[in-house]
Length: 441
Image (cartoon, rainbow, N blue to C red; front, top):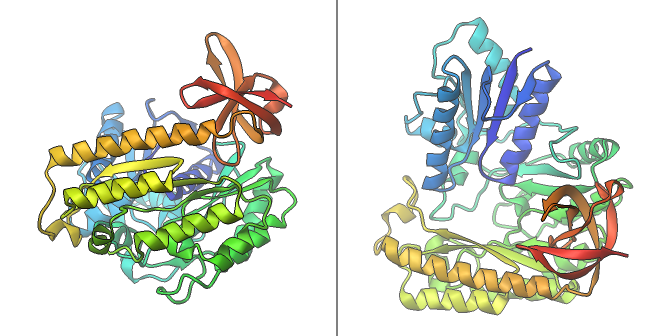
């Protein structure tokens, strides 16, 4: 039996697509082994969101070739797509597969073997000139409690710092009935929580790229709510502009929807947002936050912020810092600005020095840690439903660990019956790192 090893980098969309590729290999008789083991085939699903992601993608490709020089190394995903477009594919790649072709991975592998293609064989389409949504169907994932469901691909936003629209193409949405059918199948296989993901989830079902108010996403959420096997629905990310009164009123009626919203901010300074080509102001962003807090009880609001974007002055940074503090996020993912070849931001004047980026990033990270602790502490003594996912050992004792709807990690003394079940737990106190200890009610 041939062996295959996978390594996934990047976003939840890549997680889903890696699960799809792994499913195809196992259905065709391959045995999956850990990436650090010797395998006949290595599949690296790459990312290009930052320079660091590019570097990690190349490192994993080289690591696979070093682990077994005779193996077939398949690289796919966003780094592959953009590197191919620039004529910069890594020489350690035997087969390069672009986006919108991952579902064909076995056919491409067989073609490579049967036709004795040379190393560097590629199957990459012009992603920026396709309107086709790549059909995929998942029936099982590596996680028994939570499944990612890809509902759309591509992005029409063209933020000035981002390569993803060039790596993923324009917005393409999945048919609603296909999504429902996939979730129903996963429910049969024991999955309880479903995370809707995509490159720009808020664009689901849109026909006008400038109009995010069509509420197709709300339509989809309402359909999923009706499915008996679904216990939880979670959104991976939202564009701030989709958070309107009508949208929030509708989704607040869905008791299966987790009150956990990731609204990508990037900056709290209007001048910086304008240079980023983000299509909202800080005030409009805050309106969305306030709407969510009006209709949901203490929802978790998380975000991304870029430190040291070109032209970011001291006063703009302080404006961003103060805004983040005012919003009081549950979690903030902080990124130091990374210059990306081929983007508008690459050529912007007044590039910020690395040491200043480091200082600003450090301050935001410290703020994020403080705000995160404050949010988690607000749930102490409250009873919350926890979906238990795994067991861990702390001090030699075994615990079951899971998440509340707000994505707070909670541990209780281990019992086999808790895993993959939703159990009411009183949150008692901080336990280990960001894990809170609880008592089963």
